[in-house]
Image (cartoon, rainbow, N blue to C red):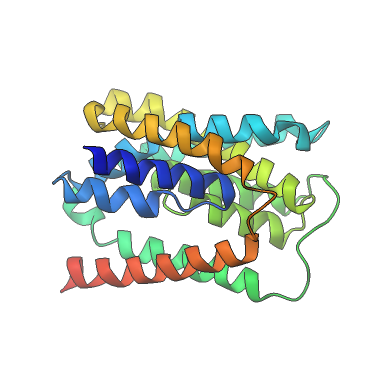
Amino acid sequence: MLELFAWALLAGVVNALAGGGLFFTLPALLGLGLPSTHAVATASVASWPGYMSAFWGVRRQLGNGPWLALTLLGLGGGAAGAFALVQFDASNFNYLVPWLLLGVSVLYGRQLLSHKGSEGPLAMRPLALPLLFGGACYGGFFGGGLGVLLMAITGQVRLGSNLQQHAIKLYISVLASGATIIVYSLSGLVDWHSCFLLALGYLAGGRFGVRLLVWVKPRLLAWTIVLFGLGLSGYYFMRFYG
């Protein structure tokens, strides 16, 4: 169980910096023998304290930004995605896992290769609404690489500065993850013993990770996560399709 806590600690740091923490905790939970849907639900619920602690450290970046729109998108999308996961049989969901990991990794890598720039004014654009809602749905449904996906979306539509995009990523993650707590708790998918241990690791990692934002080179970290996500997707392709 100490190993599970260590993976959650690392995941909390990664979520605060760029996103992709579930890339670390999902394999740990699957390694314990949990069905894939139970593992995803447990990791999603456990990640909430880490997202909250990380967001609290950057909340002032949003100032008078579009709080209402972000709140509705995050809660609505997270709840819709969680309801969708509850309908899946674990054996069928296994076949989606590597595709989801691969898709998010490729999307973020594509964003990193773009030369158009990724910063702009902190004003909600029409195009951002369906994209962020879709991102929150993904967070409620799977959550692996949610931060990576949200950073790609906010960068694509140039929603705020880089630090403001981190704040938006974390705020929507807080809301989407919070929405899953209710849905997954009622569905019985959460392994609470593992969840509490993960939550402690996420919480500590989130607090530490947000302090590293001004020190770590975000592009280097982002590429590290992309490569890790690609490798992890390859592993699960072999595991579930082999």
